[in-house]
Length: 458
Image 1 (cartoon, rainbow, N blue to C red):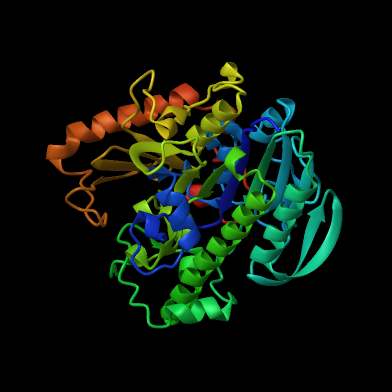
Image 2: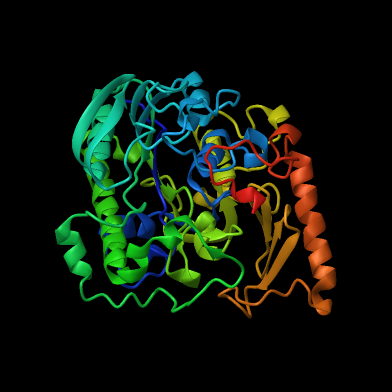
């Protein structure tokens, strides 16, 4: 059989970069992911373009900013928002790959609207219903190629079972792209396998800084949950167990790839939609764990690990800034689709495939990272982070070298006035260049609602 450029993307929900031994966590147990990191490539400075579920997923699937595709917040269930197909006007990575001859499979969380109907670009579709409960185990509705079924059990196992079914039932003559959307690390942090929870009973959780409160907003959504606050130790044990359960799920996929004799022809990518605070800064949650919205490091930093036996320059730890927009371009380049399939769409991302193979880049890489969440926009350099809340006019500036816990706002200090101006101009120029005015997060009236919290007007 000729060599294939197969791709498996494991895209987890609410998995903070800090919560992996590959990124320095000293107490978590993830032998499979440790192996992938040790024998692959770790992107040490990987970020989400938007620190909340649905927009982050849309950014990966389309390679475009939220202010381009127009989806700015999580899609709530039970309110009608989940019925709309939010990406119909966009060209997605699955569509590009399918057009290039790939067999494309989906298993797990979609969270981009109309989960029960297979979306363009997918040959096989297994997705959680948009009205699913978020608990780790129970009876849930899934769409199997458009047929709604109710399955009971631990979601990580059900999602992995469906992913393995795709691998076993695929057309062996075609390369494949498999997107696996796990949910285990999402709240509520409960009901994970007791055998995994018990291994963290004596854990000190010393990798979580003893922060007390976020000084630039009040607690919101998950961060107001009394269980995580009054029983924080149990919540942490459950979160750590969820990470270990995901590690086991990844191991099952790798074992299946090896059993099917396609492991050496398959690129594995492990990442998440955004980060998560588990008491960091006094927050439980992500960007919407506070009002106004936050972009603390734990909310925006994500794991991103690549592994492809004999094909990558393994053992690397790259320090360049990368995000889901770049990941879109990298997978497009890897598959041979091309790094900029529709130039008129104005892709902000860039392929970093040469980093994975240790080849020289044609141009120097950027030294800034941009993020947005509704009307909140951020620019981050290697040392400074500037966050602007456009509707309120609030500006925050942090010196990440001197103040890594982001406790001191320097934006009003005279000595930093020039830096604030330069970063603001760079931030505005970036979005002015790429945004679609009708989809902009700072347009009059705010983004189109996808839930009833409307965080951009706070």
